Image 1 (cartoon, one colour):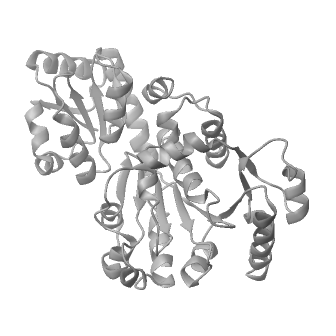
Image 2 (cartoon, rainbow, N blue to C red; image 1 turned 135 degrees about the vertical axis):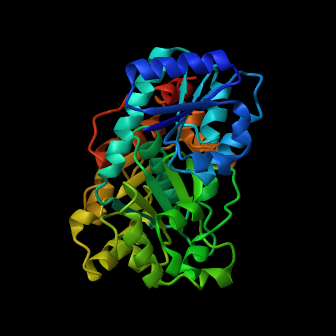
Length: 385
């Protein structure tokens, strides 16, 4: 593995290089000043697989530089070494695409190198990813919130590589649920140049919101939306599953040809509803449509969102009405969720890991990834503040 160390302190660079040479000698280790961050293209030409940046609280300029680097080289594993472990510092690191924040000490660095090596090995042995489709049974069901939150949980907690594709072609805004970045490219741009489709083009067209999590935004005007065809989506999904562990689809409830193509290619379909009669009526119609389209019942996993305990329409009533088992419930927390959406920050960043909605989404991620409940490292410290 090729490792690049950057620091404003030459003595620290030499100390880290010596430690890695002694305890991880099979790796190629080089070092340089922090000023190298100002030229992301040059860093990419150096082709490091792991970038370690030692910084101080007095180096605020590194964050935009690291963010540009994350866009230029989304596969690069970036970690920051700093004595500053405050929640605000960790949030800045997360927004800049940093995978880990380490306290000073060679032992921490050596352990990080081992984790990075394991990550690269897993990436080289990548199996085909799974396609998960979320769609509302009615407007304002919370499907986009759940899809984006699940993508963040899979990527940040479980180290899964995730792509979310926003298929609300007219008014989609999934990217803004987890990021304050204006997408430079959209799904329509990929479809216009479908002949260029390869891993680099697909990754470069998506908005990076976390080192492992990208969102391919919906078109930004109706004319461009019309250029998205079912056959385009099928090609994109075929390419995406070769390079992402999970491909999440935020599907429009108006089942047009593109939406049906999305559901046809999905391994699992998650209709999102709430506990009132209008949702149940539309949910029942949707399930009948699924049956008419030939979707097996074991592919369909209803999610009951904004659950109020004690309501007249409870989980049992929902299941009886729909004739299908509810896969998961998500408790109501209106103000916290709205605050997350308004700020473009995942709820898991704003709230403790013990928050009921965060717990519900994390449980979904654990089951879908086939893992046991996960203990987070530097991110866990952030979430508990």
